[in-house]
Image (spheres, rainbow, N blue to C red):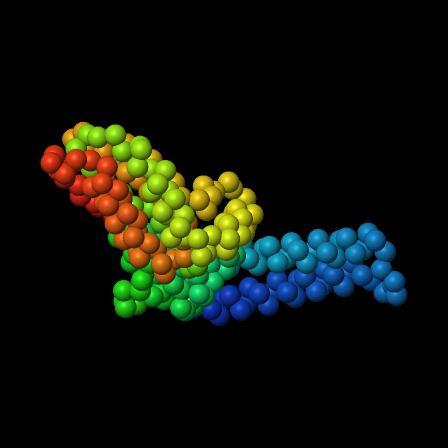
Amino acid sequence: MDKITLIIDFFLEHKFLLTVLIVVLISLVKRFIISRIRGDVAFLSDGQRKWMSRTKNSTFFIIVLILFMLWQTEISKFALSVTAIAIAFVVASKEIILCFTGSIQRASSRSFVIGDWIEVGKICGEVIEHNLMATVIQEIDLHHGQYHFTGKTATLPNSMFFTYAVKNLNFMKRYVYHSFNITVVEFVNLYPLFPALTSQIELHCEDFNEVAKRYNNIIEKHAGVDLPGSEPHIHVNSGPAGEQIVHIMIFCPTERAIHLEQQIREDFMVAYHQAFSPEEPHTAQSTVTE
């Protein structure tokens, strides 16, 4: 009895040796049972094949079960270590994973390509490079009513595409709906000024009017929506202090937007000055919408 106890203790201390012994013994038993099932026949019947398959599956299950029970403590420690390592890896590489998946999302949705103008959050610019980790853009000052490059290069991690909406502004590279405001402090009737002002705007836009109409139609077909149109739009509303705010929107070449705005402002100021008595001057100031 003491010898049996010593043998058991020995094998429990040397689990690897016990594992080999168990696998060998069960394998020998499996081969013996299979040989008995097969017998001396040259061709196996369906019943023999079924019992041979059941024997193989049963012995494999028994081996796995015994080894799991034998190595349970070690497996638990190993699983805990693997889980901790996996969690640490995911936490440490979260941004890298998000950048990689953001690149996949960009490629699958085809939201933009190199050369497009895009807006991500508060950053606008032209895409000059993109890879698995980041997108590089040349910044454009769109939020102040400008359409020129600032000279700054912004590198956006692709993880931003999951946090912010990506706006494709590519059609603005050639033509843009340019809006600006003119604020008139005194309350006067401005509507008689608008027909002549509209004619002046159309005169300024005469050289590119046909191209603007065609480009506007192309954008409408591509986007599948009804856009305002290429003709100038003027309307008025009141500000919080009772002032009148004249909203003007034109569809024009992007590089000429600021120059045309200054011409239209001058036309409005001249018409305003001529329409109202110089003896009772009216104060006017203008602001550009952001």
